[in-house]
Image 1 (spheres, rainbow, N blue to C red):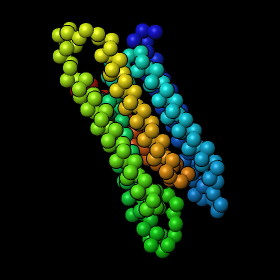
Image 2: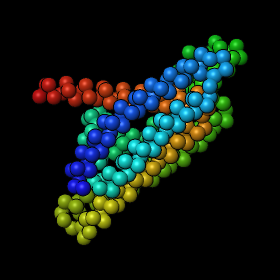
Image 3: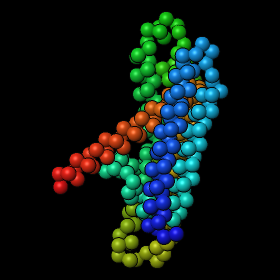
Image 4: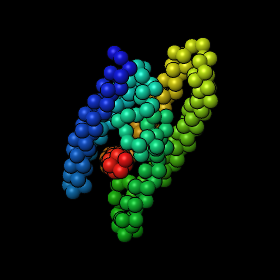
Length: 237
């Protein structure tokens, strides 16, 4: 398979994957609403719906891993993303620590909206109701993720510092240099998957659903705004 074909193939996968994600998220919302409105709830259905979304995340990781092996430079360019999305990328995709900011933000927004019930002693069971133990675990996971992010950023910076050798043709083994870049991207993608998995695992089923829906809405919002900006910019050329 040629490098161009590898990237085009991933672009097609990306398009289909986004449609599948939206389908599973719609199902997750439906199950979540039923769980909220039901007297007894149905945590098993909620867990199954969450697992479908997580399996889709793992599928994306596997597809990206295979594409990275074929054309890591093309993958880093992310031609399927808008200019805004690319400006926010860290090592070719979203920054793992973004998820922790999302947890804190969603928890704060929901807490404020349900503060009356909480003060009355009602347990909401959602992200506004994170326990001290959960906050502590989130904080610990965040610290570990920041350390790994920094280490990967440093490795990428070292790889980029040697870019003059690529331009001047002084690199004795160009393939080896590209493989090194692929290794860095693999580590970044692995950290992304481990981070979202780690966050989901420390939450309750209802909290998991809220978190995944919020993460998807953030992604869709940035993508939509970025695409609109690109269209306006092209129209003004």
